[in-house]
Image (cartoon, rainbow, N blue to C red; front, top):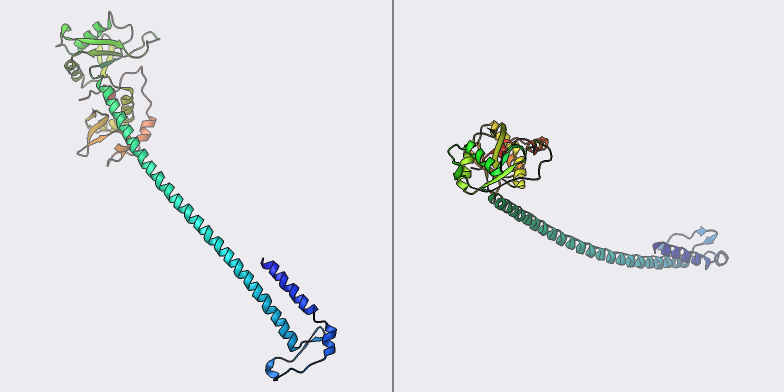
Length: 315
């Protein structure tokens, strides 16, 4: 728009000079200025034509009109630009308000998600605890090959329990059931866990107390391990906390597994209860590379004898 106005001004100036031919101005001859001589400078010549007062007034009048028109155009353009800037500012404010509302809504969803995750974790611990409580009367027996026992499984288990607790009489041990855990062994001589369920929980506790200070016992030429029957998820959680239990054993600190799942121990004369390695790393004096130790530790094989963590009774 400014370029068009500029071209318009140039055209008007050319028309002004075209309307004043040089011949007519030359024929008129020099004219004395009316009034005092202080009204303006002495006339001069431009391209052979003298400049008179009338010519100068006409010239400056045309220029004033052109500048006024240019000013009106600039003012109009500024008003339009100002309106566009105001509209753009309102749009930006609306977008910022919408963005703030979305961020607040997102933060609310995040808080709700964290709350639901905590509730879901608590429910998992409760379900895990219920599953472990349903196995309280079970004892997992490890290290017995499939063809090692003679006769029925119940007779073999009764003989094993009498070997562990000699004060038991054969007729005193009542089993609700005995079966092998998992799928049948395909390799001859392969060990497979046994799961006897004792009818009296007190007898099960007596057996677990008898093996408290040992991990394996010798029975009929085999190294047999007895431990509490726990859910798979609980065993996985215990394996993840193995770096902590190893440090506690190195320091000679006793620990205990609690229900729902947690590890209880005394550290720097304070009783602590943890569930994850991150909670353990927050303790003062605890190594910070527990997660690296857990990753480096290979998962135990099913054919190996149970480790100390699995054989530790729940007291």
